[in-house]
Image (cartoon, rainbow, N blue to C red; front, side, top):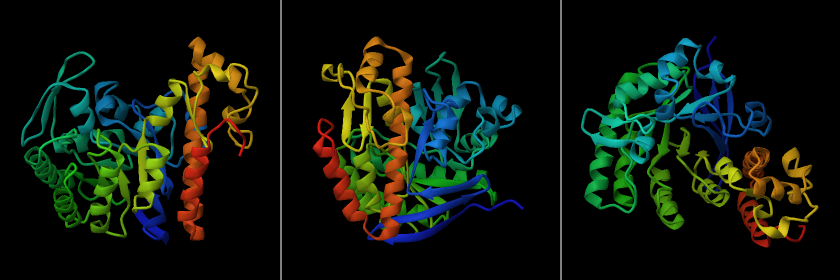
Length: 376
């Protein structure tokens, strides 16, 4: 029998929630961080390493995959899971954010968006229906509605126009998605940095009775306190029995503080992008391996970590690899960072289950502030 998509809320601690998303390809423990596999790969990592780090689900990018190798080709090759050798859950975004940030000569209309590829300039059209069709061809377990994302700062009139268009597109995506018990389509709350518009969007989407809800259009230039204020305005209006996903976020601190406001799912390129540029995330905070002070440091990033990249290589060697431009440096730091993010998520889940999330969050932030020079 095919397992229907569902969300089970297991525990709460304040507004923080611990749960599990049941899918046909396995369970996703929440709060969850989804490593970003933009073009079918989590950059600089084997997917076996991603899985071993504790990841239950990864994200694939509709915009990039539709351009190369093409959604129809992926479907002919057995779907994204088989193509990339990841038999576990996959969420695909709608492509809307990448159209905003990468595509040239884009034109928005009620029908959808017309744009030119950032790769070769070829013209494409993406309607809400086409976005869902592409995600269906990829075979993802969770699909996102097409929305219009507005970079901040922006005026209220521009934000309202995009929010209302996104709501109309959500209805069209829901109709195009149809009845697929084993998969889910999530709506996306928009509204920029305007609490009233966020509330209006959240209420309208909740009325559509979707299987999950995302908060989009944040982490696009606004201060953290603005992002958190938008979550304070939005999360209480979303159904308690459905997963809540904060798109494109973020730093470990962003994650801790967003979990405290009721968010269940996250994704961000930060751990792998930072790794490729010499920055490591650890329980002692951030470590910039480009700095000369690491040149003769025998210590590993974290002698207590279960990740070989963090435990088995000296900071001096990692510094050498990064300064030399060796790809192994990017691979090891990306591995460390993905592992640390998953370690953080497990700590969050355990703390919520034990009823001491606030204490865990305070202790974790205090450890980051202490820094990496002296051992804990």
